[in-house]
Structure formats: C-alpha cells, structure tokens
Length: 504
Ligand SMILES: Cc1cc2nc3c(=O)[nH]c(=O)nc-3n(C[C@H](O)[C@H](O)[C@H](O)COP(=O)(O)OP(=O)(O)OC[C@H]3O[C@@H](n4cnc5c(N)ncnc54)[C@H](O)[C@@H]3O)c2cc1C
Image (cartoon, rainbow, N blue to C red; front, side):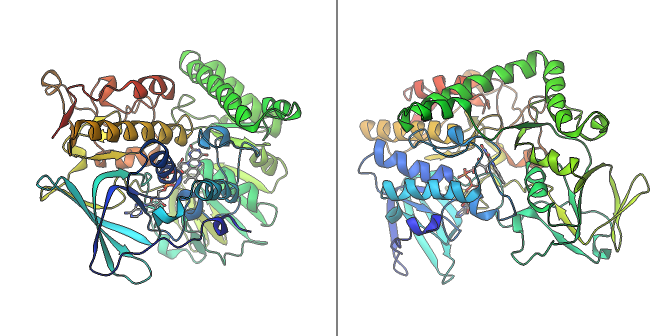
C-alpha cells in the first residue's frame, strides 16, 4: 500500500457555475493545511470548511520534491503534529512523512473536506458581504470553480512549487549536458556512471549527493561558500529507551519532543552567546568523518555565525562518508560562465559534467501566486504590517502560516491553528463577521522594518524575496519572532479583545 492509498476517497466537486459557501477555506493540503483541517474539526466542531490544493494529492513539499534521497532535515517528533505520535526514526523520508499524513487524514475522516487539482487564482474580499470570493482552476478540466468563504486560512507554504530558483549564469545555453533543478527532478534522469556537478551547499545538496554518489562516476559539489551541518546518528536514545520500557507511544512523543526542544533552545542560546565554541564543535564533528588532512577551513567553515541559516542534520554523516570514500568532492569557488562541457570557475579551473544539478533554492511565493484584492483594490502585501507573522493590517478575515527556521515548521502550524480556532470561536461568540488587525495610535508612526532581521537570519530565498513580504515593527506583537520558545507561551494567551483586533 502506498501512502496515498489511505486517502483516495474522492471529495465532491462543485457543479459547473455553482458558487459553494464555506465558513473557512484552507489554501493548501501540505502539513500545515492538513493540520489546520484536523484542528478545525476538533476545536470548531460544526464549522463548514474545505481545503483546496493545486497538486494531485496531499503532502505539499513532500510530493513536490522527488529527487533521490528526499528526506526531512529536522526530527519528526517535532516536525510531526503534536497530536499524532511519530514512531519511526527521527529523520524521515518523504514517503514516511506522506504515510504519516495519510494516517492523520484517514483517522480523522478529513478526506471529504479536501479537493485536489484546484489551483487558486484569485481571492477577492468584499466588506459589503464580509466574504472572500475564491476562484480556482480545476486541473482535470480547466474549469473555474468558485467559492465564497468567511475566513481564509493560508497554508500555502513559502515557495513556488512549480519552479525552483536557478540563477541566470552567463552562457548557460552553451552547455551541452543536462541541467536539472531538484524541485523538478525528471523521473527519467539516468545518472549511472555519469559525472555529476551539484551547485549549492544547502540541505538539498546534502541529501542528493549521498543518495546518488554510489551510482555516479563522481559527484562534485560546487559551492560559493560553506554551510554548517550537524552529523549524527539517526536515532534518539531517549525514545529507544522509553520503547524498551514499553512506554505508550503518545507519552514517548511528548517526552521526546520536550527533550528535543529543550536541547534546541540551549543550543540556540549557546550559538548566540558563545558562537566560537559552537563553531569548533560543529567543525570537529565534520573533521571526525573527513580526517585530519581534509581542508575543512576552505570547504566547511562558513563565514556566518552558526544558526543564521538553518543547520541541516546529516543522518549518520552520509554526506561526509561519500566525500571520505572519494565518490564525492567539494569545490569552493564561483562560476565565471558555463561552457560546452561544464562550468568555468573564477579561479580559471573548468569543471566538466554530464549532468548539472542546480540545488540553488526556491522562489519565494508568500501568497501562493494568488491574485488578492481587498474591496476592489489589488493587495500590495508588502504595504501591510504583520501581527505575529500570522495576520496582516488591511487584510480582513485571513490568517497565514509561516513556520520556524530554527525549529520544526509544524510546531508553529499547530500554534497558529490554536490561534485561528480561538479567534473563530471568539468571533462567533461576539457575533462578529469581520476581524482585522490594526496598529494602535501610538504604533502608527513607528518605523516599518523588513520582515526579517538579516542579522538574525539570512537565507538567500528570503533576502531575494524580502520586498514581497509585509513589514514588521520593533514590537513583539508586530513581528514573526522566529522564537518558538516565547511564542509557545505568548500566542495561546492572545487577548482577542485587545485594541489590535478590530471587529465588525
Ligand atoms: C526539501 C525540503 C525539505 C524540508 N525539510 C524540512 C524539515 O525537515 N523540517 C522543517 O521544519 N521544514 C522543512 N522544510 C520546510 C517545509 O517546506 C515546511 O516545513 C513544510 O513542509 C511546509 O508545509 P506547508 O504545508 O506549510 O507548505 P507546503 O508543503 O509548501 O504546502 C503548501 C501547499 O499549498 C499548495 N498551494 C500553494 N499555493 C496554492 C494555490 N494558489 N492554489 C492551490 N494550492 C496552493 C501547494 O500546492 C502545496 O501543496 C523543507 C522544505 C523542503 C523544500
């Protein structure tokens, strides 16, 4: 049985020309959207809702990415939902994650609420009706399905699923081999016995390289600058011990989550307070795999402080084992231009390859490429100010899920779900039809800052897309703090009667 077999109960499809109405419309059936659907059924029983997704099934990130070895880079005790125990190894494959999500859908009878192959094109808010009108193109027929909804819950992820980011290098057209982006990995790609060049040094590279290296003639990783990694055993001792003691899986899940979160909090604090020692430890772990003569200074010593970018966990050090075995090697240099046979580097060296994999990241897509209008005016998302990274000034009846970089995404999608469900229940009690966040008079003239403090966190796709994102203020409530450890206490205490929430 595949992961998808568990959910294939066809959800109903709207009859042509009929507008269907829902209390809540969830955009996206990835881990956030499916989690949102679960929480709605538990916390807002009776709410009429639908989940729409452009793809052919649930999973989002975990079905879009089909490159060899595709796996999580954070542990599944915290990347899994808080309500469903994770019973496998902490770093999981995409198939394992899809199976887990399929079980959540089946166990909670969520399938009838989810409609696949619905690419949402537009979302129009009307303050006359206090409703969103959503138009979606149906993948099988191309027909437009129309919905109205009181509340829009954006679980669209953060990047464009249809196309990854590839820089525009000079003379790319001259290259005679095949260029592949991991996000659109071709099923027929034959890399056996081939020279493969992987450009980029993030989590994707760290996954693809060990997965293909044994079958390739050789894999060269070309990076402009190094990245931090944490190699380690793909197991959690505490979980193993508790299992030996036959402790209930739901207890194990909760206890192990607490241990992981405690350790991550301590690690983050050490990164900020004592980055040099942490750097030494991280590099020491890499050195243990690569030996005393390997040039770690050039290839594995980043220029930034640990934790300014997500640190990928390398299960069982597989990337470094590939390098130590000679099947993979690192080059730290910059591309001057492409050639017929590969790339010419700024150092003058040419790297030849049959296949070039551009593991160069994502195109940020904060609103799922949906055309938003508010009372007839196009929404310029970057003009708004965010309330805790989950609501936005000038955008009524909408909440948005953007997870954590330094902790698992799903920790936040569970927290946001509690927030949305409490807000919906509060509105029902009040008899309110519209809610909007608004700056208080004393906040209106405060400087509007970029979404993200680059000193704190600076991955390329965020820097490239910063102009697309809303603004923040230098106030805890008016920014996405990226700090799970304060948000887990603060978000549940939200006072929905505070003047930051304006109801009609
Ligand atoms: C390869 C990879 C590995 C990762 N590993 C981890 C990890 O280990 N830990 C971690 O915390 N994070 C990880 N991340 C980040 C990851 O994307 C998130 O953690 C998480 O999967 C996001 O879930 P989501 O449901 O919010 O969004 P997505 O998984 O991006 O799902 C969004 C869904 O919304 C749909 N959608 C978007 N726009 C529209 C539209 N207009 N109409 C209809 N449907 C739409 C998409 O089709 C998609 O199915 C990883 C990311 C990648 C790319």
